[in-house]
Image 1 (cartoon, helix red, strand yellow):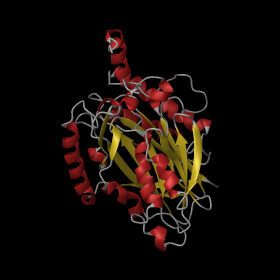
Image 2 (tube, rainbow, N blue to C red):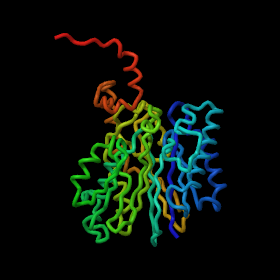
Image 3 (cartoon, rainbow, N blue to C red):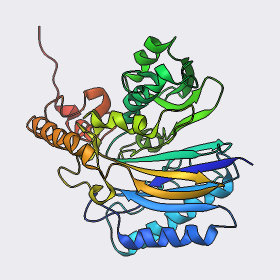
Image 4 (cartoon, one colour):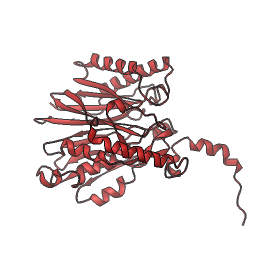
Length: 364
């Protein structure tokens, strides 16, 4: 029997503004998932990162299963209705269609799933982010699975010594490619160093063992306009021929700059926080990431452990705040504001439309 973990998220309303999820929405989602345990799913856990509702589910139905996705869709729809009753901000924001067609992909919610045969012990880490885009995971996945300066196991663990395979998706052209590391490392970096377009979707060990899965949904590309940032999720397995738990979370001690933050239009530091601090306030940010750790046992989620609720990450949080000061001082100027190419997927085109008739040609 194979176990599947489905991590599905959506922004279905928050308060005040884009800050956090209302407790009643979390309670409603948790009750609906609990009612489905033993019927559609094995186990579940509900949480939030900023204004995003996060559903973690285990089952035996594999990836892209209509029953699992319908369950998530029904929960998001019910919670969005509650959000509208309370006049919460952005109620139903990530539900771009009310007609479920068998899969929530392409409907707004973000989805990361993986199916695997459980090992003797299977530690699984679930990462959830707010105020950034799917490509934010690229740097960290490279460090975890391809950088021996981060992951000692690449050097000293025979089970990892052959390296990993990265499946990269081009979210603009809707195509994918696989890179084998370490032999194609430079080619991999040539693409994933442009995270607004090229996103790591899966990481596999060379023998095919699934190691990581991310969400790659881009809301603006689905909706055809800016409706909010994508706020991605990621699942990473660890230990026993995969990077250790400590190697998986170690890259988050680096204050990486990601796209998103206020109005999805600015670069900001990606701050790892414990769940109590997963509420975006300053300039609707800075971008946050949480990590919940589980042991998976016969489909049951043993945990969670709040991995970033640790003084070991205090230093990177302080550095993120310093970088936030530096970037905020730039105001509307790049590099704090995104480049013009990336601003095409925000609300700036609406401003340009208002001014297009006022431009005049420059004489010779």
